[in-house]
Length: 342
Image 1 (cartoon, rainbow, N blue to C red):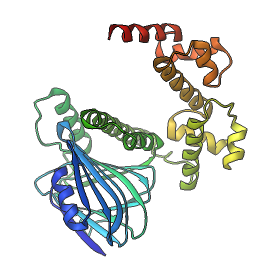
Image 2 (image 1 turned 90 degrees about the vertical axis):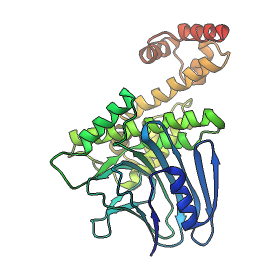
Image 3 (image 1 turned 90 degrees about the horizontal axis):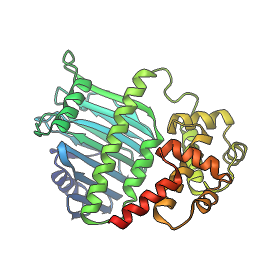
Image 4 (image 1 turned 120 degrees about the horizontal axis):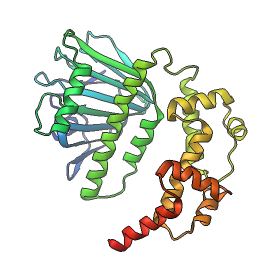
């Protein structure tokens, strides 16, 4: 078992300390730091960025060739850590004597400590792990009512006055967050545009993790229902298939025959992961694609309708108006007017 130590919550310092521990090549673009590792310690990428309002994100996409402990010790800070595991299993304990708790793929975790214990993350040898850690510094005043209001709400939720101990929450499974993290990794822009897009998506991920915590408190007996981790992997495959083939006439029977899930598990998985039935999700994907086509191409409305796999223009107009509160024709006119004025 190898042990590495981090003694800072500042992204720049954390990445520099990890470079000292793991080797590799550290690069910087604006405020984003990327550590590429390919040596006898392991292979992969660790990257992070400091954002406004005392928020930062750190992402591991790594395979370590040894069992590894990563000890994070910041005795003068009381941050809240919001964690999401996209692949593999991440294990955590408060100090070496604390109880070990594990986060599986697609699970959220929230943790903080009032005792200033070190947070220890455990990485399993030869297992690919992809996990995102969003840190919120709750103590520092920002002189920004919106930011300080968020921090006050987080302190109220996760620092109970009567509780002097540590807090950890392991949430139910959520594919919405996985999709946002995939969008985060797919950002191809450079410079300030990239920084702004990262900041926006990190805030969305943070909001989804807080919402997941609220939902789990309301539905403590539901959690993942009858779904196994393998089932959830399959639900993600079905989701990707729909996203890539939304213009086709996809049927429920086709999906459960192709992917081997029963109709009940298929629907349960989509309600759990996306908050929609399969049919509703297909419709959502088509409508979003239609909006992009109206905004970014010269297609007329009829061409858009057929491109997304629908045959009825009146039905399309109905569901488009339900989502965007205007007809496709008016939406296209508004986009054209904006382009002219620009």
